[in-house]
Each structure stands twice: as structure tokens, then as C-alpha cells.
Amino acid sequence: MARRERVMRMSVEQPLWRALTAYRLLTMLYAIGLFVTAQDRFVRPWVAIGYFVVLVVWTLATLPRVANAASCTKRFLTADLVVALTGILLTPVAVEHSRIVSGGPTLPSIWTAGAVLAYAVKGGWRWAAFASLLVGVANVAQRGAFSRDTLHNVLLVCIASIAIGYVVEVARASERTLARALEIEATTRERERLARDIHDGVLQVLAMVQRRGTALGGEAAELGRMAGEQEVALRTLVAGGLVPTSRASEDASQGALVRAVEEPDEPTDTSPRDLRPLLAPHAGSRVSFAEPGAPVFLAPVAAKELAAAVSAALDNVRRHAGTDARAWILVEDEPDAVIVTVRDDGPGIPEGRLAQAEGEGRLGVAQSIRGRLRDIGGTAELISVPGQGTEVELTVPKVSRGKAGSGR
Image 1 (cartoon, one colour):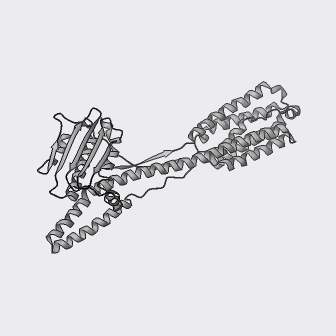
Image 2: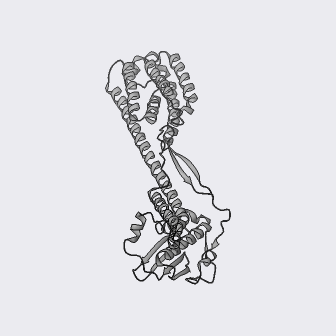
């Protein structure tokens, strides 16, 4: 079944936008409440009322703008900051001078911080520093002098917004790193799957053509030589990587994109499958098959992958131990796992040969056996003593930890 590319979008900053939306609403109500409770200290209340009408309309109308980074454009940020600065500068016009001197709040009050925080979440700490600087200048201008209270308020907004902007930048970098890691992991798994398929099919056929052609001689020997060259080239390609990794999106306004190969749809029949019929065809004059007298049930995909791993182990016996070697397959149905052991009486594997074979692109053990068992949550143990044969023990838990065990 064909696999599909699945695109996931990650955005660790989205909760910040939701929080900012709530903050703007609450601080708008707070600013209006301050006006209602202290309207007797306003020398021109109609100026404050006019400004609050604009503030309410602007806040409610622009809620979708602060829903995500894509909607929060530079033009909107500029207009939003202008609304905040206008309210600060209108404060001396609407409020009596004594209230300003005593450190009373400006018309927008802490709503102004929301405009600065929008800069921080959108553009990081540098944008936040720029917006908070303008707010500080406006506060000094409306007071007509530089005071300790003004410095305190300006520094509070500046430090908070810069800190949030810095955290956003770090979060975005971490998000891109995580997205890249997930892509690499998905690509590696797909590469391993393709490598197993190629090893179990194309490479085996090329190797057989090379052996038979060499044995027949003549034109067949030339064909065998060409097949051998193609086998080496294909093994090199498999070892080097078949699927190029793609780059995760770095568009901060949308979040990081993760492109991963999606697994094919699970089979509609997810009922447990008896493993014995899948392994029984291997029995023959040189292969002995021992199994319990009762069905050995596994999830369909787990049973299929385990049977393929056994086939790969027997292929290795034929290729490396010779056609005269004997092999034994033993199936054990334990309470929590199924164990399949493949043993032969061949010459065994010299120390270091498996690592050398993997470096040469020969992935029979690394991918066709261990890779398959790893994908279904199982393990593969290989024991080999030179001159005493090789034993491969494949263990698959009945409640599989891998993706293939979902059918159980």
C-alpha cells in the first residue's frame, strides 16, 4: 500500500496569542473601570469618552488580528501602537494636572502593555524594545517631566516585553530544531524500510544472477559480472541513504512545518493472525520447523514482519553457510511474548564481520532482521561462535510497543 507524505504544523507560540487576546479584552475593561470610578477628576470627560469609544471598537474589531502571527501584520502593529500612544498623549488633555503629577494612570492604562507585547510575540525582543521605547517617550511627554514613577513603569513594561520576546525567539529556534529532528527520524525510518525491501528483493536477485552466471560461464558469466557490479552500486546507494531529508519550514508566522512519510492505512482486518502458517512453508529437507500444537496469535503486521525477519535469517544461512547447511526454526508461545529461534550448523560468523558487512551496505542483519523487529517493538539477538553455527532469537511482545502492534 502506498505511503503518503503527511505535513504537520508546529507552533509553540500559539498559546501566547490566545493569552494576548484575553489580556487585551480584560485590560480594556480595566481602563474603562478606572475612568468610571474617577470621572470626577477629569476636566474634559468627553475627550476620555471619545477615546474609550475608539478603544472599545478597535479592541473588539481587531481580536482576529491577535489570534495568530500571520494575522498580526506590521501595519496592524503600527496602528495598534498609535492607538496606545494617542491615549497616553491625550491624558493631560482629559485629566486634571494634579492627577498626572500624583502618578495617576493614563487613559489606556495597562492596555498599552498589550500593544507592546504584540510586538514581542511577533518580532522578538528587538521589536519589543522598539515599541517599549516609544511608550516610554510618550509617558515622559504626557507627564512633562522625568520622575521615578515614570521610570519604574517604563522599565517594567520594557523588561517584561523584552523577556517575552526573547523567550519567543528561543521557543521558535527550539521548535525548528524539534521539527528537524522529527523529520530526520521519519526519513530514517522510511530509508530503512526501503533498504529492507530492496535487500529482500532486488539485491537477492542480483546476487543470485551473479552466482549462477559465474557457474554457467560464457555469456552468462558476463551477465553475472554486470549483475555483481549493479549489486555493489545499489548496496552503496542503500547504505548512503535513499531518501533526501527535507528542510523544516522556518516561517515564524506559521510555525515550523514537519514533513514526514505517513504510514499506510492499517488493514481493515485487525484480528490476531496465526504465525504458524506464515513460517510453515520454510520447512523442508534442510530446514526443520517446530511449533506449538496451538495457534500462535500476533497482530497482523507484527506477524508479517516477524515472518519476513525469519525469511531473511534463512536467506543468510543459505548464502553464508552453504546449501548443505541445516537450519532449525523453533516457535515458542510465551504468556507475554512470541519467541522464534532460527539456528544453523554453519561455520558461524567471524568477530567483526557484521559491522564490516553493514559498512559495505549488506543490511541483511541490520535492517531485514533487527530493523524489522525494532519497528514492531521486538528485539533480535544474534549469537554466533566460529565453527559452531549461528543462532538468531527473535522476540515480539504480544502487546507490541511498536506501531505495528496496534491491531492487538
